[in-house]
Length: 227
Length: 203
Image 1 (tube, chains in turn orange, red):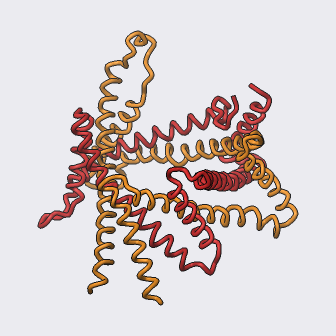
Image 2 (image 1 turned 180 degrees about the horizontal axis):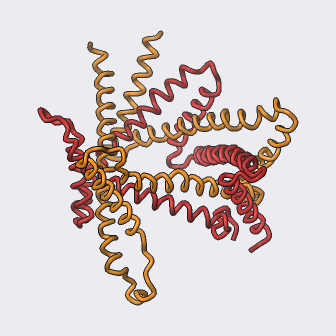
Image 3 (image 1 turned 180 degrees about the vertical axis):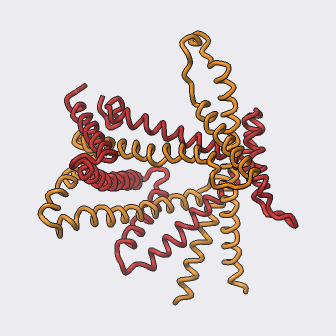
């Protein structure tokens, strides 16, 4: 019994891998079938996870088992949830709009906090810290650290300058940026291309690793019938 | 602006302001209310996901009912959706859930990633033939140098100096991009909180 389940599991894995990799010769029904099945499985899994961890754990269970204060507090999201469900119906869609507005408002505030505390402040601090050589004793290593910090800072500033499309009032007729800004933006473009090149290489390495894994898995499955 | 539009805008502005002030300044009850609003928002976001899945289910069901051209694929989607949902919901179905997730979902995910290796080579070849400018050349050369630096070569092993040099230059660009994205997020968030942008439908 155990062997037959292993066989079915291995066969499914082999077939679905083959169906997806068949896209290399062009779009075909087997590839589409595998992708639709993948979407179905992912959606089914996400639906259950959301239902179990969010709806049941955070809403329904506390509403049944919680204290009176908890129940009163959860009555509001319960009402908002019902209103949000009304967005499915074109006639009652208007009832879901305030709930969507609440979600957007809270989401925007959380995004601002995340951008400031999670990216801008730490990244600016890291840029300044790269010039901190207090923990380095050797002069050569200090120069190396400062040089590294300088290149990173140059890259950061020029990349940001590349996205600066505003121009002075005096240049409004030509519509072009000043000479200095053009030079810095060009440098930013070079840093930009280098960054995307490194990212591309990283993604490509991961993709090659995935290809090796899948081919190896298929070979192992076929070989298991003979050895 | 219509009254109902004004009402939605007021809700977005007030809720956003309360959460933002509550996150930054511990004034009176604001952090507690802010945390409560975030908790409600996480519940509502979950429900929004369920509504999206429900809508997808309805679309594919109607395709099957109308026997439209690609209804076979819709049938496969719904079949695997229901199988996975009930296999996850019923605790005694761990074997079926394991097969669906470990022997279909993960192999398909990894295979799609593997397909990317072919697509990326094709895309880079097209880039060099269709747009041979400085930007494209720097991009391709950097990618090649990084790959050469990362690859373990016979006898000499990896070349950490090559990839290290390129990655130092890339760190500056990546930091610039991260700060740029964060500044964009900050600005968009501020526009929503001040009511200048109303993506929830208010005119």
